Image 1 (cartoon, protein in one colour):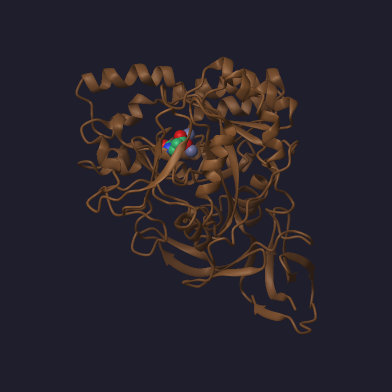
Image 2: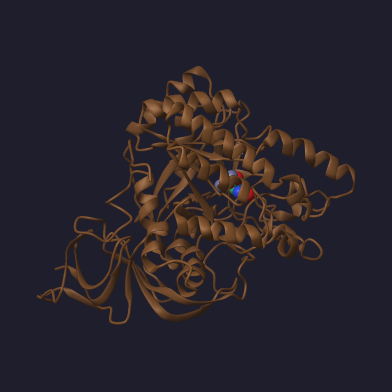
Length: 491
Ligand code: URP
Ligand code: ZN
Ligand code: ZN
């Protein structure tokens, strides 16, 4: 016996059609008109849309960063994602300095034990020693086909151009894709101390320390190296005109370059949000920084004209007020070789958060929550407000992420043979986004009070219902690692 989704409208990247969908076991087995109910469990989808489960290819769950650890883990983050219609994500494993890729993978596999939705891993290269370079091909055997390099965060994650170039050469040989956080970290590390020395310590100065030019310059550098090496490039969290223009030029040259932006960069501004009174602006500190209404327009145009291929979240949330918990903590062993989990025993311990940067914007942990809201916010402001079609929405949120990162057609679409990851989407359901109803482990959200129309009312992961209205039906361990294929298409 299977599950028959009846009378709904199926939306894929190419079509929007009224059809029934039969799911047997974990996959879709039939799509058509008037499929016979014959003993199947029937889900009446009249007036509803059937969307492929969302895929967020940019998350940081339980990331040790900025002197603390990001709050959501592979339990809380997964539930929140699913309540927002996302059924798979790709998280960034960080190669421990002095350690190997496989050390990092071991840590992230441990983190992912409680998984409730499907997930994959990118590998962030932090320390490319010759023996680590030799490890790259073995990552493909592990289903990890994307390498990430940070061109910023000097003395933390930042790599140099030699590392970027050599990684691209090796990745190209092995059918992998390289991702970059594109900001010139050397310039940022020069601007920041002079701002602080001039007494410019409030959160709003974060934006001045990372101007659009440093994002444009780094994006252009990575795009050119992609052209030179032939290595597919995916620029993460793009925010501004100089960066988008660099990507557009590269694509016009025929280079294999692609890019994403993240939900927050379409809406929030440095002036209003980073510049909020008191320390409130710290909630919105992320890198690159949120920008201006003009940049919002540039980003919408780029998703419309195909310059950008995907929208993700960069979900990396830290307490605003500090504390709650304690949760499992992570520390780096003395020899620096790997991250080690430990239970924080001190009952008075409060995990630090944004307050670490009071009086010094450079010490505010970078990142914000958003995993749960991505689909609802982009539907409201993209589809409902006529900026993109429902099909383009599916392409940006589900299909392109799956294609670019080697998960298609298992993930990212509703088709015969694909995993039955389905969001039953009610286009008429109204919802007010609030920290009081979020499932993310956070004490604030950046879309507080925003009203949306259109929301997932039921969510299925490989044929199992995991969300039913407000009810959570998933289980720890339901989520599976998705091994990804090399030589994915360049879009
Ligand atoms: O501010 C951000 N973006 N935090 C997460 C780490 C990164 O750079 O993606
Ligand atoms: Zn980044
Ligand atoms: Zn990130």
